[in-house]
View: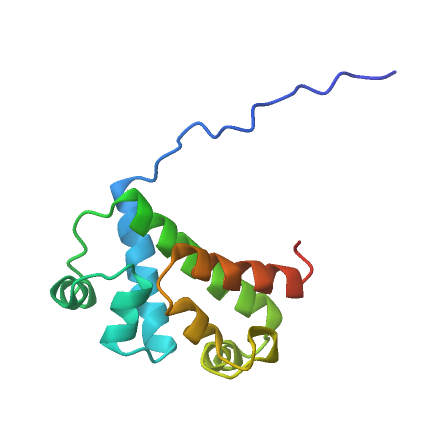
Length: 136
């Protein structure tokens, strides 16, 4: 006997992340940037040109309000981290990969690509990692 499979909408119930979720994303990315050994200038650039004073507050745990674009950047950066964790069994290799020259990017590092500043540059690295691990 065949049973009908109920269809669901592709739209999530909650389209916006909560303040608590955004703060957790920010803390995770702050820790990630430490593991990637980024300078404050690099961190601010990857976060969309964040002010150095705001970044300094983040490092102290004072996150504050996170807008939609910044939340998207944080999400993409954590997706990059996730992709690297799938690709490398040793986390330190993944952390180091960010700064190593890569022939797939014309001999420059993933960090060089991401430092161009656009959210699309972050997404490019995320897409590359997804494709490399077979998650196309």
